[in-house]
Image (cartoon, rainbow, N blue to C red; front, side, top):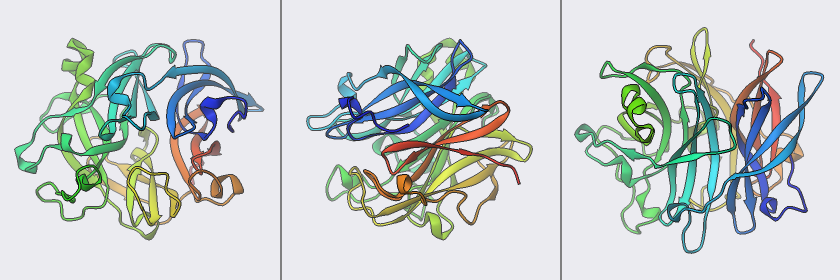
Length: 337
């Protein structure tokens, strides 16, 4: 998928899609559409398939726009980078997305039965854990994905698990505050964390999907291709070894936490998390699985970026949909070797 030159909503790119199957059985992408000034909306596009391979899309409009006060600021706005999980236990598509509001990026949650009509559940709040000696609600947060099936949380309750990436640098919005780290955390680089939502609470009130607790560190940068930070990509996928989590790793220089970077390289790697305790990493790639090689991946609004955000099966074959240089959407076949 490339930007439509006649659509002002796509003036700065189409990228980082969520995905899901509609009630009609068709496969849809929910791409981030970026208008001039880096203002993002979330669209809907049916995937076109030829000979079992995704080859294009049919646009079907905008399904979420930054039309709430907490999704826009005085000089910016956006609903960004949707990640979608079909949660069969709820009979709903659960979307996490980034609301680019008055104080910067904040994770939010919405739900839908049909991918077209979305009910906002609001920005995520974090239960306080005194052992961490901090309030996770103080920090910006991105790259959040929901597991597709309930698991047993550390407190023994049946719960939905969520991966997320806290951004410790408060100084980006409050000059002079620096990067206060939670107790026990010694590496301030952005990393993958896990939190939990009790399923019983969600069944009583869907708004509980935006209330996360029992926060734990999962994985941080460990290899050269992820020197600056890592973050989760598509929702976790169950494999025989546990939960497969594709993630991005970043190298280079970040000039401004909220700007469209020009001196970074994004590559994709993988983690395998324990099937029963997804806070435990059982395997990970020391080398990237996907790097920016083609011109579409190397040239764009943010050069040298491959950013996986969705995995879907087409005729039994898994395909990864990913952002290319923050400008286009590509697809790669995911092979097991």
